[in-house]
Image 1 (cartoon, rainbow, N blue to C red):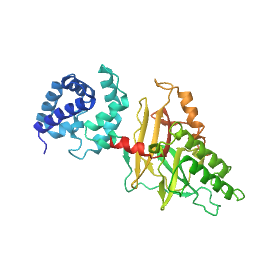
Image 2 (tube, one colour; image 1 turned 120 degrees about the vertical axis):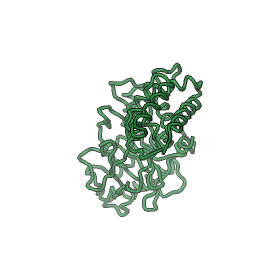
Image 3 (cartoon, rainbow, N blue to C red; image 1 turned 180 degrees about the vertical axis):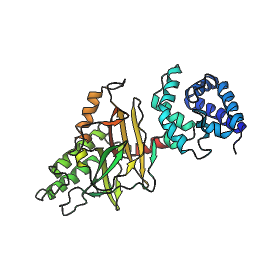
Image 4 (cartoon, rainbow, N blue to C red; image 1 turned 135 degrees about the vertical axis):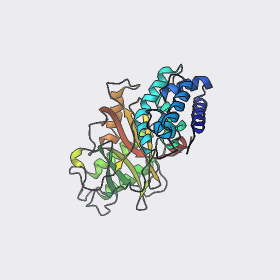
Length: 345
């Protein structure tokens, strides 16, 4: 059983690590950490509250405490505490930000809080889906001679349906020109075929146009920079490029639709989640664009940029993702080497 001394020592180490990560003086960091995370006016008050709670009912009192319970992360069965942290961490970061004398992005503060509380994967916005998470891939043009040239799978994020579109790309060397050539060849080969698309009205020509626009968007200004090249996603041993978008509700498939558990934050800035699926990865991107909140971007230009590319797909819903009433522009894209570099930082 963990002792009061061990908990106090853990609290001290948290404040010390918080100071080191943000390069703050120790005493200054202690005050921010106490008020931001544990809602105590002074660091000494956090120690006093801990002593009082421990002497009353020992660990049970701490586990049920509104803020001191976060000290118990990685000590006991802490899933309920972690879920509470996901909901409260925005408020923690906002409290710290309101007290600071320097400008630090709120999303960076969120990452630091997760790191200090002992959740390094949450700090890097890494989502491990687990063994029970399964994507049900199906042919998108099921009348083609090669029905696996384009596949799709549906899933849910925050109660909203998303569609992943996987375009086969068997060539090992991946570049924008190579992809354009390969898609053009496929277009020519399937030009006279009955389209047979699962979304009535869509065609391979439209799919090709959407994919090229999407690739050009994500490669804009990054020509010849290999670290930004999208990685392929393997389905049954074949390489695919996978992008995704919010799905028109009437287009939702009858197949299995897994629920992806990630926590989009009501904060300004680009939120990039690395989603691990069967030892592979996709990136889920979300950006708050709600006019009821301050945004550091021209949200209309930002939305139009993506609505003319990845969100222009025939199946894409014009409505934005809503989380607790707040709107976010969101999509899936392939993982790249730059994402790996950031995740390891």
